[in-house]
Length: 565
Image (tube, rainbow, N blue to C red; front, side, top):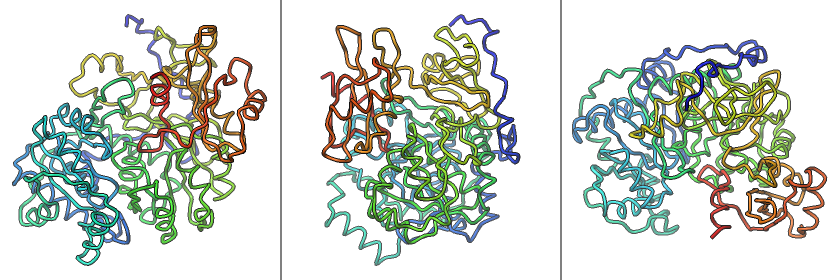
């Protein structure tokens, strides 16, 4: 792009005037030298407090320190992996995840988070692209690795069972339940796999050699969802992650109590949102993560929540919506809850309003990208009601809004959001062209169309690639979906563009009913109350459910693919 340098000018930080008085305009991205340094500090401050709890078993900060050091020593001295080598994690939310995570980071190696629900093809791509020298995997998903291993070398495999962190009677009970009763462990063959418990046992006998880790060293290869092709590995350095941690702490730390928080962690920790907002932020604050392995099993999740005085929860719109429609959840005690954070997808006003009515607490929407570690914007904690925005840029973040030529748009107009800050990735792993297309003189182009109001609140209009063009007019799916879900008989909705000979595209809406009596005609009458003519859906398809990612984000791309086959 030959855009004049003069156009690469940041907006004035008008949002700083809207920050609560105890939120700084800038943060110190160099407070810690590495994520290993972060954990060392947390262990000194909170040694005997619980850091993670799962199915009644807790892991204190001291135990996390000891076990992650043993894990790191094993990687160094038995597997002979070198600093900077990539190690893949294919684990759900369980106590093994933080142990392996911090073990890899403390050894100066690079974490490659992998979705446990990947197909062999997706797993094969990520392992081959990252060049991972080892993988830590839960037995429930090992059959996928066994299939992928037929085509690529996989290096070392560390295999764990969900019950491994538990004492003997419960460990065996969990193993029998998963393997023989619920049949959650398909047959596989990985004869060279190393048992996780053996790794810790042998690692404890070895000396952990603490490497020097520079702030600019890679901490994560965090792969994008692959919405525009094969997934790409965002290179996130220790400084990127630590800066974003300080940004999150600046935004929400004032309402968190040091050493006294319990965060409900239903979003998977391998996802960048939960990794930052749940895992790393609460480790730094001395909080505890209540790990939920399968949030789709709402009865089990609610049962675990009932056993704890939880103070915080994060999620996506679909998770909050599902909880609100769960009778047992509605009967929980919310008196200790003081932080509810939504992200990953647009938060709908009906969900936010119902959440506030039930819990008495405002649901704060945020916005981020894998490439930004991820936090970019968040609603200030002192909001009293739903703002309809993704909030204010977090401290030490600059933004600009541009047109298709990369030129700043006039104030008040919508434009593509570009971001600059210490949390912005170093680039895409072994993808120089993709890096050049996304990073422009330190600015990251997001592909999201937004507006910014006079206080600095950012509102997403939609994804650039999701915009529906009807007879030359742009229709934003979020706006249509928001109108549709206002109908009391609608549970969920997703809008896409459908080809039309007359208008180029028309709006098609996919709807999951809350009440079976809802009809197409009734729904369209409702839409005409809120939408101008060309935005009203022309096509309506009722479904039992909508395709979602592992964090519950509705997959419009999958709907378009299914619809056009």
